[in-house]
Length: 83
Image 1: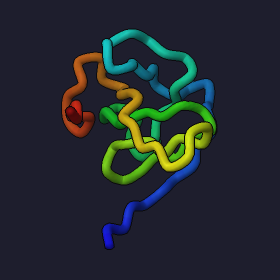
Image 2: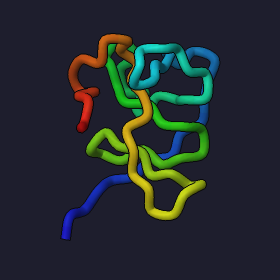
Image 3: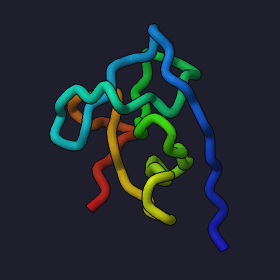
Image 4: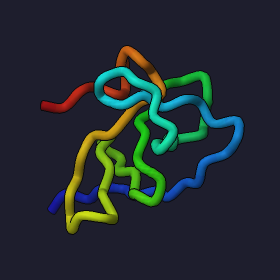
């Protein structure tokens, strides 16, 4: 059984910008980590759960895990695009 850590965050004014999988700014996404704002992190929709594997657990669709965004517009580490 694979254990995945979940964290819940709310948006703050100083949060970095999140970009969707097409590299477009998306104000509905919030960064999953605030440890070091200078380092890229994955982003999830407001109200969804951030998982330690970079995916988001959707609260609107039962058990859907999806990649939603990154604070790096070019999707560098740790925001690898998952096929």
